[in-house]
Image (cartoon, rainbow, N blue to C red; front, side, top):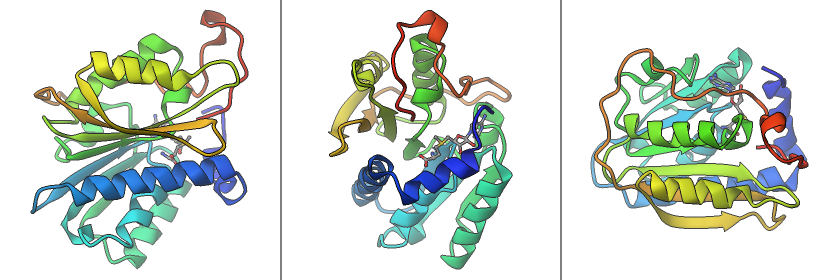
Length: 227
Ligand SMILES: C[S@@+](CC[C@H](N)C(=O)[O-])C[C@H]1O[C@@H](n2cnc3c(N)ncnc32)[C@H](O)[C@@H]1O
């Protein structure tokens, strides 16, 4: 991985754009829980970091006890921190933090189809539009009709990357429920509903490649604003 993702999480303490992004993501998770049918709510988080978006929401949400979640994250220190937060919230029986490769379908076995799929901090770390499209299409493996998907994308000075995300989501059978830019204007957060039927999860499928950076050789030169 090109970055120290554990250190990257420290930016949540100082960067308004990340703080505002987190606030919107939590608002969308909270809304998704609000509109969930009675009974178990299945959540998966892809490249979950330390899980602060979901865990911070559950700490205040009346449906917390209905949530069964699988968070998949590669960095062991982030997983350790997430697990501590899960234990101190009394959610250890419901929330599973897998220290593994979120790009491999096997790490979602038994946890999908999910009612809520969190894909935050990923789209800006894919090589190009084709790879983004591959990931969006593969969300059908984690989803069922009506699943809610929460995503983020950093904008750059000259390019509204979120326009591409929204276009590809439409083409992949998702309808937009809500979309917001952070007040800083450089982070986009979306909430989409899956309208397709979902597909069976096969073992050991590569859902996408987290390259950590866009493929500059294949795209016009632009200034990256991160995730
Ligand atoms: C930009 S951070 C986003 C973290 C979190 N989703 C958030 O929004 O705060 C990207 C995360 O992806 C994780 N990651 C990168 N490649 C991964 C992989 N193949 N499998 C699981 N996690 C991965 C990194 O360790 C990092 O925590």
